[in-house]
Length: 109
Image (cartoon, rainbow, N blue to C red):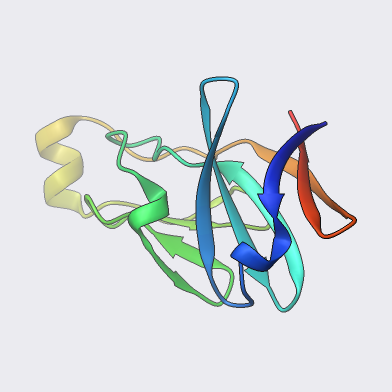
């Protein structure tokens, strides 16, 4: 388990990025439950920590791919035009177990 920081830094309905062992992790607080997944979009490596969180879905600021932060699953892919131009679509991201101990967030990589 890797310590990320105080749980108070990720208020309900928000997300925050952390770097652990050279890996960028996104942590989202959905209704008081913490969820973690890779913070780099699988389409064109957009920074999901700069994305928009709506409910449990984060939208990549780069090309609009959408991911469920609770599962890492793609719930909306890039537009047909972007897919055609790049030849790529987003794929599911890895998720990680998050725990809170004594007010601090820990992630199991």
